[in-house]
Amino acid sequence: MNAIIVDKLTKKFNGFTAVDELSFNVETGELFGLLGPNGAGKTTTINLLSTLLMKTSGTAQVAGHDVAKARDSVRKSIGVVFQDIALDIRLTGRENLEFHAMMYGMGKAERRARISEVLRLVDLEEKASMLVEKYSGGMKRRLEIARGLVHRPKVLFLDEPTLGLDAQTRRHIWDYIRKLNREAAVTIILTTHYMEEADALCGRVAIMDHGKFVALDTPAKLKDLLGGDVVSLEVEGNAAGLEEVLRGLGWIKKLKLHEDVFSLTMERGERRIPELIQTAQGLGIIVNCVHLRKPSLEDVFLHFTGRKIREEDMGQNGPFGSPARGRGGRS
Image (cartoon, rainbow, N blue to C red; front, side, top):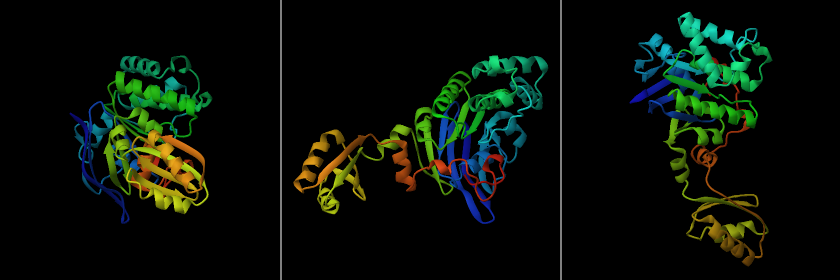
């Protein structure tokens, strides 16, 4: 059964196509990742599915409800954690959750029980009476996840949930995301700039660029598409001459040369490295460094988009304003 069904969904802003006839399904209980550089259309897609933006054309259903015809039903069925912190720092953690639950019409007894549940889920029971202004960045993010869950949504949208957090805190958030997906059986749509985050958490990943999906599969299958190991070879000498020789070797599937560093794709790279070194030395070329690694989602992303996600791109607003607030941003 599908929690989300999207068919030729399109959104245009003054002639610019931010989401271009997008079609995909997300199964109930799935943790689905959405990757892409700024301007790819990720947040616009989330805003369309969460009814913060109206579509230009196409259709989309979330938890069995049409996003255009049954907006209230969709909103009752979803939770959203935006890129930017949207908590009232003058209230306690519990008061933030209480206010949110009241907005969803939950009765007093139900609110108290549910708030205790979600606080326990994100390990904030002991901090529930503390003012949010005293929370760390990781605690605030966990509270926002709890708030998104308090009304028992069927689908949870996490838009860059670990953006700006340190590596240790980010991994703790990963644990909470896995836990709520497993124990609360919530369907999760996760957008992220962190390749390792998508690889660690998501059952399937879609890579988005220019409003379209350029790849969609499990992380393992996406990495397999690159067809082998990646060997980096840093040399000193006639790199152009070595390039000519290497291009004649049938077992090298891909070759890129940037200054004096070769990036080579091949099967069983660990067995081929001695031959690479011998070939270089035979031409009087010094090999300064050799590095072998298995393909990563970063390599897949580079393959399909022709670029890497840079830290300085993260969280920037597009020309249409802050994407996290649904005002037409393109990220």
